[in-house]
Image 1: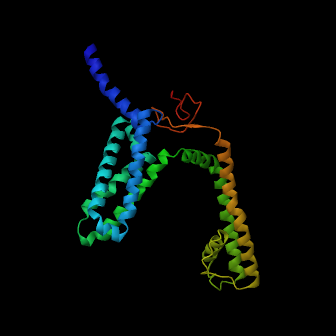
Image 2: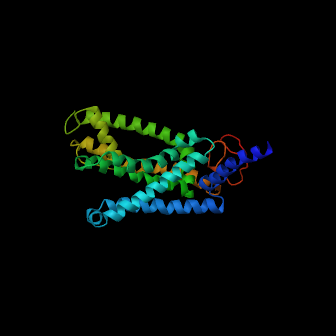
Image 3: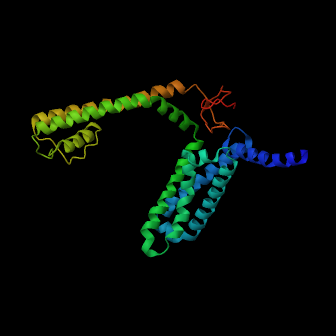
Length: 276
């Protein structure tokens, strides 16, 4: 009985060691694993870019193709190991990073199902999905964690602000429809609202232009208003970033719920209360 218990504990120890290396970056091997993976992600992105240049693709197609498959197989092994070592496999698979990891390897295998010149456009479209690998970089950018936390804290304020902007463009678009009397491109209220949005955001395509003096005055007011409106969400997020600047974030991941955003002095998971 004791021997069988020891034998049953070995796989658990093996999975736990793998989990600490793959999911956590607070250890030497965890950092080394992340650094190697980071180099492979950057290399994959470079390959995607070079593959889009016709002259380079024709000259180095064999090398680019083999390098792409080597990196894809490494990502496949990484994805399988993450599933095996994860204490909650379903939670990882359907998490944001789990989906991104899956999308990073899927297109290369989907492309095999569409061989031949007739399917070339479909294959190209599928191969473009490889750019999703750039999203895997966000796992390794500490500043990105601070930005995500600040955006989450600012969500309600920005949401209320966006509702205000929505009401504003509805009013301004309707007003311009009345002022221009349904002419000069302002043929309907939705079109007028579209004009108000591109004017307020200072994009200004120029496909719809007011002709009346009052319409030009309102357009000038909206343009000036746009500059101040753009600064508001930036200020909201900047305030949250400055608030969290001195609060160091731990990269350690909770073994129970996989939450990774913890303050440096945290001993328990902020999401489930599990001991870190």
